[in-house]
Image (cartoon, rainbow over all chains, first blue to last red; front, side):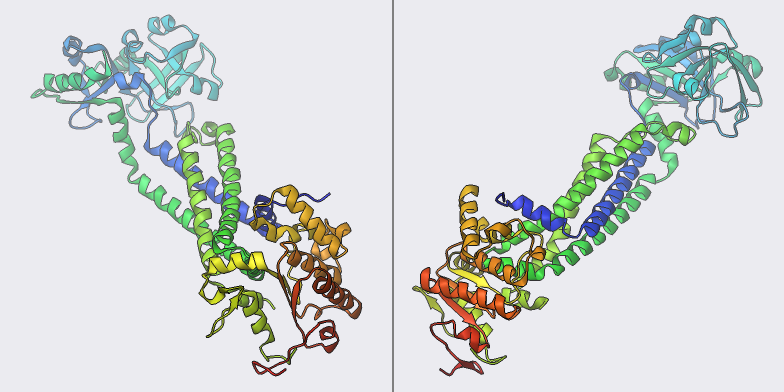
Length: 385
Length: 185
Protein backbone atom coordinates (compact mmCIF):
# COMPACT_ATOMS: atom_id res chain seq x y z
CA UNK A 1 0.00 0.00 0.00
CA UNK A 2 1.37 3.41 -0.97
CA UNK A 3 2.00 5.87 1.84
CA UNK A 4 1.75 9.64 1.47
CA UNK A 5 5.12 11.19 0.65
CA UNK A 6 6.45 13.95 2.89
CA UNK A 7 8.83 16.75 2.10
CA UNK A 8 11.71 14.97 3.89
CA UNK A 9 11.28 11.82 1.79
CA UNK A 10 11.12 13.89 -1.36
CA UNK A 11 14.35 15.71 -0.48
CA UNK A 12 16.12 12.47 0.50
CA UNK A 13 15.07 10.77 -2.74
CA UNK A 14 16.35 13.72 -4.76
CA UNK A 15 19.63 13.88 -2.83
CA UNK A 16 20.31 10.19 -3.33
CA UNK A 17 19.04 9.83 -6.89
CA UNK A 18 22.57 9.71 -8.28
CA UNK A 19 24.04 7.41 -5.66
CA UNK A 20 27.62 7.53 -6.87
CA UNK A 21 27.73 11.31 -6.96
CA UNK A 22 26.02 11.58 -3.58
CA UNK A 23 28.49 9.07 -2.11
CA UNK A 24 31.47 10.93 -3.57
CA UNK A 25 30.15 14.27 -2.32
CA UNK A 26 29.58 12.88 1.17
CA UNK A 27 33.02 11.27 1.07
CA UNK A 28 34.75 14.49 0.00
CA UNK A 29 33.04 16.42 2.80
CA UNK A 30 33.88 13.63 5.24
CA UNK A 31 37.57 13.53 4.30
CA UNK A 32 37.85 17.31 4.40
CA UNK A 33 36.10 17.52 7.78
CA UNK A 34 38.37 14.80 9.14
CA UNK A 35 41.38 16.71 7.85
CA UNK A 36 40.11 19.97 9.33
CA UNK A 37 39.47 18.36 12.72
CA UNK A 38 42.93 16.78 12.62
CA UNK A 39 44.59 20.12 11.80
CA UNK A 40 42.69 21.93 14.55
CA UNK A 41 43.61 19.20 17.02
CA UNK A 42 47.24 19.40 15.95
CA UNK A 43 47.16 23.16 16.37
CA UNK A 44 45.73 22.74 19.86
CA UNK A 45 48.29 20.09 20.74
CA UNK A 46 51.17 22.29 19.62
CA UNK A 47 50.00 25.63 20.93
CA UNK A 48 48.07 24.95 24.10
CA UNK A 49 49.98 23.09 26.81
CA UNK A 50 47.91 20.79 28.98
CA UNK A 51 46.62 22.37 32.15
CA UNK A 52 45.80 21.01 35.56
CA UNK A 53 44.41 22.56 38.70
CA UNK A 54 47.70 21.92 40.46
CA UNK A 55 49.59 23.72 37.67
CA UNK A 56 47.79 26.95 38.54
CA UNK A 57 49.51 26.81 41.94
CA UNK A 58 53.02 26.38 40.53
CA UNK A 59 55.52 29.12 39.82
CA UNK A 60 58.74 28.52 37.93
CA UNK A 61 61.82 30.58 38.62
CA UNK A 62 64.59 30.81 36.03
CA UNK A 63 67.60 32.94 35.36
CA UNK A 64 66.52 36.35 34.02
CA UNK A 65 69.25 36.25 31.34
CA UNK A 66 68.19 32.94 29.82
CA UNK A 67 66.81 29.57 30.67
CA UNK A 68 70.19 28.07 29.79
CA UNK A 69 71.91 30.08 32.56
CA UNK A 70 71.89 28.23 35.90
CA UNK A 71 70.85 29.71 39.23
CA UNK A 72 72.85 29.54 42.48
CA UNK A 73 71.71 26.70 44.76
CA UNK A 74 72.07 29.02 47.71
CA UNK A 75 68.94 30.91 46.57
CA UNK A 76 66.94 28.13 48.24
CA UNK A 77 67.40 29.64 51.69
CA UNK A 78 65.94 32.96 50.51
CA UNK A 79 63.04 31.30 48.71
CA UNK A 80 62.16 29.27 51.80
CA UNK A 81 61.57 32.51 53.70
CA UNK A 82 59.29 34.21 51.16
CA UNK A 83 55.67 34.37 52.38
CA UNK A 84 53.10 32.55 50.26
CA UNK A 85 55.48 29.79 49.19
CA UNK A 86 54.33 26.37 50.40
CA UNK A 87 57.09 24.26 48.84
CA UNK A 88 60.14 24.77 46.65
CA UNK A 89 62.42 22.32 44.88
CA UNK A 90 65.21 22.55 42.33
CA UNK A 91 64.28 21.34 38.84
CA UNK A 92 67.29 20.86 36.59
CA UNK A 93 66.75 19.60 33.06
CA UNK A 94 69.11 16.75 32.24
CA UNK A 95 68.35 16.35 28.53
CA UNK A 96 69.41 12.73 28.28
CA UNK A 97 68.81 10.12 25.62
CA UNK A 98 67.48 6.85 26.97
CA UNK A 99 69.41 3.69 26.14
CA UNK A 100 70.47 3.79 22.46
CA UNK A 101 67.90 6.36 21.39
CA UNK A 102 69.11 9.34 19.41
CA UNK A 103 66.08 11.40 20.40
CA UNK A 104 64.21 10.72 23.62
CA UNK A 105 60.76 12.23 23.86
CA UNK A 106 60.44 12.34 27.66
CA UNK A 107 62.33 14.74 29.89
CA UNK A 108 64.49 13.96 32.92
CA UNK A 109 64.80 16.35 35.80
CA UNK A 110 67.06 16.43 38.84
CA UNK A 111 64.93 17.31 41.88
CA UNK A 112 65.03 17.21 45.63
CA UNK A 113 62.96 14.07 46.42
CA UNK A 114 62.17 15.31 49.93
CA UNK A 115 60.55 18.45 48.48
CA UNK A 116 59.29 17.10 45.16
CA UNK A 117 56.03 15.68 46.51
CA UNK A 118 55.13 19.10 47.80
CA UNK A 119 55.35 20.49 44.28
CA UNK A 120 53.74 17.86 42.03
CA UNK A 121 50.87 17.14 44.37
CA UNK A 122 48.60 15.68 41.69
CA UNK A 123 51.00 12.81 40.92
CA UNK A 124 50.34 9.59 42.85
CA UNK A 125 52.71 6.66 43.19
CA UNK A 126 51.06 3.66 41.52
CA UNK A 127 53.92 1.16 41.65
CA UNK A 128 57.05 0.78 43.78
CA UNK A 129 57.72 2.98 46.78
CA UNK A 130 58.36 6.70 47.05
CA UNK A 131 60.36 6.06 50.24
CA UNK A 132 62.74 3.87 48.23
CA UNK A 133 63.17 6.72 45.78
CA UNK A 134 63.96 9.12 48.61
CA UNK A 135 66.41 6.71 50.26
CA UNK A 136 68.37 5.61 47.21
CA UNK A 137 70.41 8.41 45.61
CA UNK A 138 70.76 6.41 42.38
CA UNK A 139 67.09 5.72 41.99
CA UNK A 140 64.46 7.49 39.94
CA UNK A 141 60.76 8.13 39.79
CA UNK A 142 59.26 7.28 36.39
CA UNK A 143 56.02 8.44 34.77
CA UNK A 144 53.48 5.70 34.07
CA UNK A 145 53.36 6.45 30.32
CA UNK A 146 57.11 5.95 29.98
CA UNK A 147 56.98 2.80 32.12
CA UNK A 148 54.28 1.35 29.84
CA UNK A 149 55.94 2.45 26.62
CA UNK A 150 59.26 0.80 27.45
CA UNK A 151 57.69 -2.02 29.46
CA UNK A 152 59.83 -1.15 32.49
CA UNK A 153 59.76 -2.95 35.84
CA UNK A 154 60.57 -1.74 39.35
CA UNK A 155 64.29 -2.23 39.93
CA UNK A 156 65.09 -1.90 36.23
CA UNK A 157 68.32 -0.12 35.32
CA UNK A 158 67.92 3.01 33.21
CA UNK A 159 70.86 4.62 31.47
CA UNK A 160 70.75 8.17 30.13
CA UNK A 161 73.35 9.89 28.02
CA UNK A 162 73.08 13.63 28.48
CA UNK A 163 73.10 15.99 25.52
CA UNK A 164 73.35 18.86 27.99
CA UNK A 165 76.00 17.83 30.52
CA UNK A 166 79.19 15.87 29.95
CA UNK A 167 77.96 13.00 32.12
CA UNK A 168 75.82 9.88 31.91
CA UNK A 169 73.23 8.67 34.39
CA UNK A 170 72.76 5.14 35.63
CA UNK A 171 69.51 4.98 37.57
CA UNK A 172 67.33 2.32 39.12
CA UNK A 173 63.57 2.63 38.78
CA UNK A 174 62.19 2.87 42.33
CA UNK A 175 58.63 4.07 41.80
CA UNK A 176 56.05 4.94 39.14
CA UNK A 177 53.78 7.97 39.28
CA UNK A 178 50.54 8.79 37.54
CA UNK A 179 47.92 11.53 37.57
CA UNK A 180 49.78 14.53 36.17
CA UNK A 181 48.96 16.13 32.81
CA UNK A 182 52.13 14.58 31.40
CA UNK A 183 52.95 11.19 32.91
CA UNK A 184 56.16 10.74 30.93
CA UNK A 185 58.90 12.43 32.94
CA UNK A 186 61.73 10.81 34.90
CA UNK A 187 62.90 12.44 38.15
CA UNK A 188 66.11 11.70 40.02
CA UNK A 189 68.18 13.08 42.91
CA UNK A 190 69.71 16.49 42.38
CA UNK A 191 72.47 15.42 44.72
CA UNK A 192 73.48 12.74 42.22
CA UNK A 193 73.74 15.30 39.45
CA UNK A 194 75.73 17.61 41.76
CA UNK A 195 78.07 14.76 42.55
CA UNK A 196 78.57 13.84 38.89
CA UNK A 197 79.22 17.47 37.94
CA UNK A 198 81.66 18.09 40.81
CA UNK A 199 79.20 19.99 42.99
CA UNK A 200 78.92 23.24 40.96
CA UNK A 201 76.37 24.68 43.43
CA UNK A 202 73.84 25.52 40.75
CA UNK A 203 70.34 24.47 39.70
CA UNK A 204 68.51 24.86 36.41
CA UNK A 205 65.24 26.29 37.74
CA UNK A 206 63.22 26.43 40.93
CA UNK A 207 59.72 25.03 41.06
CA UNK A 208 57.52 26.65 43.66
CA UNK A 209 54.06 25.79 44.93
CA UNK A 210 52.09 28.72 46.24
CA UNK A 211 49.30 28.64 48.80
CA UNK A 212 46.56 29.76 46.38
CA UNK A 213 46.16 30.83 42.78
CA UNK A 214 45.28 34.34 43.97
CA UNK A 215 48.60 34.51 45.83
CA UNK A 216 50.65 33.56 42.76
CA UNK A 217 51.11 37.11 41.45
CA UNK A 218 52.26 38.37 44.85
CA UNK A 219 54.71 35.50 45.21
CA UNK A 220 56.08 36.14 41.70
CA UNK A 221 56.63 39.80 42.59
CA UNK A 222 58.32 38.92 45.87
CA UNK A 223 60.62 36.34 44.27
CA UNK A 224 61.67 38.70 41.49
CA UNK A 225 62.29 41.45 44.04
CA UNK A 226 64.23 39.16 46.39
CA UNK A 227 66.97 38.60 43.80
CA UNK A 228 66.97 42.06 42.24
CA UNK A 229 70.46 43.51 41.83
CA UNK A 230 72.14 40.19 42.66
CA UNK A 231 74.55 38.32 40.41
CA UNK A 232 71.71 35.99 39.44
CA UNK A 233 68.56 37.96 38.90
CA UNK A 234 65.55 35.75 38.33
CA UNK A 235 62.39 35.70 36.32
CA UNK A 236 59.48 34.04 38.07
CA UNK A 237 56.35 33.15 36.15
CA UNK A 238 53.42 30.80 36.35
CA UNK A 239 53.85 27.31 34.95
CA UNK A 240 51.46 28.17 32.11
CA UNK A 241 53.39 31.31 31.15
CA UNK A 242 56.59 29.26 31.25
CA UNK A 243 55.11 26.61 28.93
CA UNK A 244 53.78 29.24 26.55
CA UNK A 245 57.35 30.51 26.28
CA UNK A 246 58.29 27.10 24.87
CA UNK A 247 55.33 27.15 22.52
CA UNK A 248 56.53 30.44 21.04
CA UNK A 249 59.69 28.60 19.94
CA UNK A 250 57.52 26.76 17.38
CA UNK A 251 57.18 30.01 15.50
CA UNK A 252 53.80 31.05 14.21
CA UNK A 253 52.51 27.52 13.90
CA UNK A 254 49.00 28.76 14.57
CA UNK A 255 49.02 30.88 11.40
CA UNK A 256 50.55 28.03 9.40
CA UNK A 257 47.95 25.48 10.43
CA UNK A 258 45.22 28.11 10.15
CA UNK A 259 46.29 28.78 6.56
CA UNK A 260 46.23 25.10 5.66
CA UNK A 261 42.79 24.75 7.28
CA UNK A 262 41.51 27.71 5.25
CA UNK A 263 42.74 26.11 2.03
CA UNK A 264 41.02 22.85 3.01
CA UNK A 265 37.73 24.64 3.69
CA UNK A 266 37.99 26.72 0.50
CA UNK A 267 38.64 23.62 -1.62
CA UNK A 268 35.73 21.93 0.08
CA UNK A 269 33.45 24.85 -0.76
CA UNK A 270 34.47 24.69 -4.43
CA UNK A 271 33.89 20.93 -4.61
CA UNK A 272 30.50 21.11 -2.93
CA UNK A 273 29.26 24.16 -4.83
CA UNK A 274 30.29 22.53 -8.09
CA UNK A 275 28.57 19.25 -7.18
CA UNK A 276 25.38 20.95 -6.04
CA UNK A 277 25.30 23.15 -9.13
CA UNK A 278 25.67 20.10 -11.37
CA UNK A 279 23.01 18.20 -9.47
CA UNK A 280 20.55 21.07 -9.72
CA UNK A 281 21.36 21.87 -13.36
CA UNK A 282 20.50 18.28 -14.27
CA UNK A 283 17.13 18.78 -12.64
CA UNK A 284 16.30 22.21 -14.04
CA UNK A 285 13.43 20.79 -16.00
CA UNK A 286 12.01 18.96 -13.00
CA UNK A 287 12.26 22.09 -10.91
CA UNK A 288 10.43 23.95 -13.65
CA UNK A 289 7.69 21.29 -13.45
CA UNK A 290 7.46 21.86 -9.70
CA UNK A 291 7.15 25.59 -10.35
CA UNK A 292 4.41 24.92 -12.87
CA UNK A 293 2.60 22.78 -10.30
CA UNK A 294 2.57 25.74 -7.93
CA UNK A 295 5.74 25.39 -5.86
CA UNK A 296 7.09 28.83 -4.96
CA UNK A 297 10.69 30.06 -5.01
CA UNK A 298 11.00 29.73 -1.25
CA UNK A 299 9.86 26.11 -1.34
CA UNK A 300 12.30 25.23 -4.10
CA UNK A 301 15.05 27.06 -2.23
CA UNK A 302 14.18 25.03 0.87
CA UNK A 303 14.46 21.80 -1.11
CA UNK A 304 17.87 22.74 -2.50
CA UNK A 305 19.11 24.03 0.86
CA UNK A 306 17.91 20.93 2.68
CA UNK A 307 19.52 18.65 0.11
CA UNK A 308 22.85 20.46 0.24
CA UNK A 309 22.73 20.79 4.02
CA UNK A 310 21.82 17.11 4.38
CA UNK A 311 24.71 15.90 2.24
CA UNK A 312 27.16 18.21 4.05
CA UNK A 313 25.87 17.17 7.46
CA UNK A 314 26.08 13.49 6.64
CA UNK A 315 29.65 13.98 5.42
CA UNK A 316 30.47 15.95 8.55
CA UNK A 317 29.08 13.27 10.87
CA UNK A 318 31.13 10.59 9.11
CA UNK A 319 34.29 12.72 8.88
CA UNK A 320 34.24 14.24 12.34
CA UNK A 321 33.06 11.02 13.99
CA UNK A 322 35.69 9.07 12.09
CA UNK A 323 38.44 11.52 13.07
CA UNK A 324 37.33 11.41 16.70
CA UNK A 325 37.29 7.61 16.73
CA UNK A 326 40.63 7.34 14.94
CA UNK A 327 42.51 9.80 17.14
CA UNK A 328 40.84 8.57 20.31
CA UNK A 329 41.54 4.88 19.79
CA UNK A 330 44.95 5.14 18.11
CA UNK A 331 48.03 4.86 20.29
CA UNK A 332 49.44 8.06 18.88
CA UNK A 333 52.15 8.37 21.49
CA UNK A 334 53.91 5.21 20.36
CA UNK A 335 53.08 5.90 16.71
CA UNK A 336 54.80 9.29 16.85
CA UNK A 337 57.45 8.14 19.32
CA UNK A 338 56.12 10.48 21.96
CA UNK A 339 55.93 13.62 19.80
CA UNK A 340 52.16 13.78 20.08
CA UNK A 341 50.85 12.76 23.45
CA UNK A 342 47.20 13.63 23.97
CA UNK A 343 45.86 14.73 20.58
CA UNK A 344 42.45 15.15 22.07
CA UNK A 345 39.61 15.86 19.64
CA UNK A 346 37.64 18.13 21.94
CA UNK A 347 33.90 18.85 21.68
CA UNK A 348 34.82 22.41 20.73
CA UNK A 349 36.90 21.21 17.77
CA UNK A 350 34.14 18.83 16.68
CA UNK A 351 31.61 21.66 16.95
CA UNK A 352 33.88 23.87 14.81
CA UNK A 353 34.01 21.15 12.15
CA UNK A 354 30.22 20.79 12.34
CA UNK A 355 29.64 24.52 11.96
CA UNK A 356 32.01 24.67 8.97
CA UNK A 357 30.13 21.79 7.32
CA UNK A 358 26.75 23.39 8.04
CA UNK A 359 27.89 26.72 6.57
CA UNK A 360 29.29 24.82 3.63
CA UNK A 361 25.88 23.23 3.02
CA UNK A 362 24.24 26.64 3.09
CA UNK A 363 26.84 28.35 0.87
CA UNK A 364 26.77 25.50 -1.66
CA UNK A 365 23.02 25.84 -2.05
CA UNK A 366 22.98 29.59 -2.72
CA UNK A 367 24.20 29.62 -6.35
CA UNK A 368 21.88 26.84 -7.61
CA UNK A 369 18.98 28.26 -5.61
CA UNK A 370 19.46 31.70 -7.16
CA UNK A 371 19.66 30.12 -10.63
CA UNK A 372 16.41 28.23 -10.02
CA UNK A 373 14.61 31.24 -8.62
CA UNK A 374 15.56 33.31 -11.68
CA UNK A 375 14.52 30.56 -14.06
CA UNK A 376 11.12 31.04 -15.70
CA UNK A 377 8.93 27.96 -15.96
CA UNK A 378 8.90 28.13 -19.75
CA UNK A 379 12.71 28.40 -19.95
CA UNK A 380 13.06 25.55 -17.49
CA UNK A 381 10.72 23.34 -19.47
CA UNK A 382 12.72 23.98 -22.61
CA UNK A 383 16.09 23.37 -20.92
CA UNK A 384 16.47 19.69 -21.73
CA UNK A 385 13.81 19.32 -24.37
CA UNK B 1 -4.40 23.62 -33.71
CA UNK B 2 -1.73 25.10 -35.85
CA UNK B 3 1.66 24.47 -37.44
CA UNK B 4 4.96 24.58 -35.56
CA UNK B 5 5.90 28.10 -34.52
CA UNK B 6 2.36 29.40 -34.75
CA UNK B 7 2.30 30.26 -31.03
CA UNK B 8 0.09 27.41 -29.74
CA UNK B 9 2.33 26.55 -26.80
CA UNK B 10 2.95 30.21 -25.95
CA UNK B 11 -0.78 30.85 -25.82
CA UNK B 12 -1.23 27.75 -23.68
CA UNK B 13 1.55 28.87 -21.30
CA UNK B 14 -0.10 32.27 -20.90
CA UNK B 15 -3.50 30.66 -20.29
CA UNK B 16 -1.89 28.37 -17.67
CA UNK B 17 -0.11 31.25 -15.96
CA UNK B 18 3.45 30.03 -16.52
CA UNK B 19 4.25 32.79 -18.99
CA UNK B 20 3.25 36.43 -19.21
CA UNK B 21 1.99 38.28 -22.27
CA UNK B 22 4.37 40.91 -23.65
CA UNK B 23 1.48 43.35 -23.51
CA UNK B 24 -2.23 43.30 -22.83
CA UNK B 25 -4.18 41.72 -20.01
CA UNK B 26 -5.16 38.17 -19.08
CA UNK B 27 -8.15 38.07 -16.77
CA UNK B 28 -9.60 34.86 -15.33
CA UNK B 29 -12.71 34.97 -13.15
CA UNK B 30 -12.08 38.63 -12.44
CA UNK B 31 -8.40 38.17 -11.54
CA UNK B 32 -5.91 40.01 -13.71
CA UNK B 33 -3.07 37.46 -13.80
CA UNK B 34 -0.66 39.95 -15.36
CA UNK B 35 -0.76 41.90 -12.08
CA UNK B 36 0.05 38.94 -9.83
CA UNK B 37 3.58 38.44 -8.56
CA UNK B 38 5.45 35.13 -8.95
CA UNK B 39 4.31 33.74 -5.62
CA UNK B 40 0.64 34.66 -6.14
CA UNK B 41 0.72 33.24 -9.64
CA UNK B 42 2.19 29.98 -8.34
CA UNK B 43 -0.64 29.70 -5.80
CA UNK B 44 -3.21 30.42 -8.51
CA UNK B 45 -1.74 27.70 -10.74
CA UNK B 46 -1.81 25.17 -7.92
CA UNK B 47 -5.50 25.81 -7.26
CA UNK B 48 -6.80 26.29 -10.79
CA UNK B 49 -4.61 24.57 -13.36
CA UNK B 50 -3.79 20.97 -14.17
CA UNK B 51 -0.87 20.38 -16.56
CA UNK B 52 -0.34 17.59 -19.02
CA UNK B 53 2.91 17.82 -20.99
CA UNK B 54 4.01 16.10 -24.17
CA UNK B 55 6.95 14.44 -22.42
CA UNK B 56 4.97 13.45 -19.30
CA UNK B 57 7.47 15.17 -16.98
CA UNK B 58 7.12 12.84 -14.06
CA UNK B 59 9.77 12.98 -11.33
CA UNK B 60 11.80 9.83 -11.96
CA UNK B 61 12.67 9.11 -8.31
CA UNK B 62 9.06 9.19 -7.16
CA UNK B 63 6.48 6.46 -7.60
CA UNK B 64 3.30 7.03 -9.59
CA UNK B 65 1.49 7.62 -6.28
CA UNK B 66 4.07 10.14 -5.10
CA UNK B 67 4.12 11.96 -8.44
CA UNK B 68 0.36 12.40 -8.32
CA UNK B 69 0.58 13.51 -4.71
CA UNK B 70 3.15 16.28 -5.38
CA UNK B 71 0.69 19.17 -6.00
CA UNK B 72 -1.15 18.21 -2.80
CA UNK B 73 1.99 18.89 -0.72
CA UNK B 74 1.15 22.56 -1.13
CA UNK B 75 -2.32 22.14 0.36
CA UNK B 76 -3.41 21.79 3.99
CA UNK B 77 -4.81 18.28 3.44
CA UNK B 78 -3.88 15.56 5.92
CA UNK B 79 -1.92 12.51 4.83
CA UNK B 80 -5.10 10.42 4.84
CA UNK B 81 -6.99 12.94 2.72
CA UNK B 82 -4.10 13.22 0.30
CA UNK B 83 -3.96 9.46 -0.04
CA UNK B 84 -7.68 9.26 -0.76
CA UNK B 85 -7.48 11.93 -3.45
CA UNK B 86 -4.42 10.39 -5.08
CA UNK B 87 -6.03 6.97 -5.26
CA UNK B 88 -9.22 8.49 -6.69
CA UNK B 89 -7.20 10.25 -9.40
CA UNK B 90 -5.26 7.09 -10.20
CA UNK B 91 -8.46 5.06 -10.38
CA UNK B 92 -9.91 7.64 -12.73
CA UNK B 93 -7.08 6.97 -15.20
CA UNK B 94 -7.14 3.22 -14.54
CA UNK B 95 -3.76 2.99 -12.82
CA UNK B 96 -4.56 2.37 -9.15
CA UNK B 97 -2.72 -0.95 -9.42
CA UNK B 98 0.44 0.82 -10.63
CA UNK B 99 0.62 3.24 -7.71
CA UNK B 100 3.95 1.92 -6.42
CA UNK B 101 5.64 1.78 -9.78
CA UNK B 102 8.39 4.21 -10.71
CA UNK B 103 7.99 6.06 -14.04
CA UNK B 104 10.67 3.88 -15.66
CA UNK B 105 8.54 0.83 -14.83
CA UNK B 106 5.57 2.21 -16.75
CA UNK B 107 4.85 2.39 -20.47
CA UNK B 108 4.62 5.77 -22.20
CA UNK B 109 0.83 5.63 -22.21
CA UNK B 110 0.76 4.76 -18.52
CA UNK B 111 3.19 7.59 -17.73
CA UNK B 112 0.91 10.05 -19.51
CA UNK B 113 -2.08 8.73 -17.59
CA UNK B 114 -0.17 9.26 -14.32
CA UNK B 115 0.53 12.81 -15.53
CA UNK B 116 -3.22 13.27 -16.14
CA UNK B 117 -3.93 11.96 -12.62
CA UNK B 118 -1.42 14.50 -11.29
CA UNK B 119 -3.19 17.23 -13.24
CA UNK B 120 -6.55 16.22 -11.76
CA UNK B 121 -5.62 15.58 -8.18
CA UNK B 122 -6.14 19.15 -6.98
CA UNK B 123 -9.52 19.23 -8.75
CA UNK B 124 -8.62 22.21 -10.96
CA UNK B 125 -11.21 23.94 -13.09
CA UNK B 126 -8.90 24.02 -16.10
CA UNK B 127 -6.67 21.28 -17.54
CA UNK B 128 -4.12 22.35 -20.14
CA UNK B 129 -2.49 19.71 -22.31
CA UNK B 130 0.43 20.49 -24.58
CA UNK B 131 0.65 17.88 -27.33
CA UNK B 132 -0.31 15.14 -24.85
CA UNK B 133 -0.18 12.40 -27.48
CA UNK B 134 2.97 13.56 -29.25
CA UNK B 135 5.16 10.86 -27.70
CA UNK B 136 2.63 8.01 -27.71
CA UNK B 137 1.72 5.17 -30.01
CA UNK B 138 -1.75 5.29 -31.57
CA UNK B 139 -3.44 3.00 -29.04
CA UNK B 140 -2.00 4.86 -26.03
CA UNK B 141 -2.89 8.18 -27.69
CA UNK B 142 -6.44 6.94 -28.12
CA UNK B 143 -6.62 5.99 -24.42
CA UNK B 144 -5.26 9.36 -23.27
CA UNK B 145 -7.57 11.35 -25.52
CA UNK B 146 -10.55 9.31 -24.32
CA UNK B 147 -9.69 10.14 -20.73
CA UNK B 148 -9.38 13.85 -21.50
CA UNK B 149 -12.66 13.76 -23.39
CA UNK B 150 -14.37 12.00 -20.48
CA UNK B 151 -13.02 14.63 -18.11
CA UNK B 152 -14.57 17.35 -20.17
CA UNK B 153 -17.87 15.61 -20.66
CA UNK B 154 -18.45 13.80 -17.37
CA UNK B 155 -16.39 15.75 -14.84
CA UNK B 156 -17.20 19.19 -16.25
CA UNK B 157 -13.55 20.16 -16.58
CA UNK B 158 -12.42 22.64 -19.17
CA UNK B 159 -9.66 20.95 -21.15
CA UNK B 160 -7.55 23.05 -23.47
CA UNK B 161 -5.33 20.92 -25.67
CA UNK B 162 -2.70 22.01 -28.13
CA UNK B 163 -2.05 19.67 -31.01
CA UNK B 164 -1.20 19.60 -34.68
CA UNK B 165 -2.81 16.20 -35.11
CA UNK B 166 -6.32 16.44 -36.67
CA UNK B 167 -7.25 13.03 -35.20
CA UNK B 168 -6.50 14.31 -31.72
CA UNK B 169 -8.32 17.56 -32.40
CA UNK B 170 -11.40 15.56 -33.36
CA UNK B 171 -11.80 14.58 -29.69
CA UNK B 172 -12.44 18.20 -28.76
CA UNK B 173 -15.78 19.93 -28.74
CA UNK B 174 -14.27 23.00 -30.36
CA UNK B 175 -11.19 23.59 -32.50
CA UNK B 176 -9.37 26.91 -32.77
CA UNK B 177 -6.68 27.43 -35.40
CA UNK B 178 -3.63 29.58 -34.90
CA UNK B 179 -1.36 30.88 -37.64
CA UNK B 180 1.68 33.06 -37.04
CA UNK B 181 0.36 34.11 -33.65
CA UNK B 182 -3.12 34.98 -34.81
CA UNK B 183 -6.39 33.12 -34.43
CA UNK B 184 -7.63 32.18 -37.86
CA UNK B 185 -10.80 30.30 -37.02
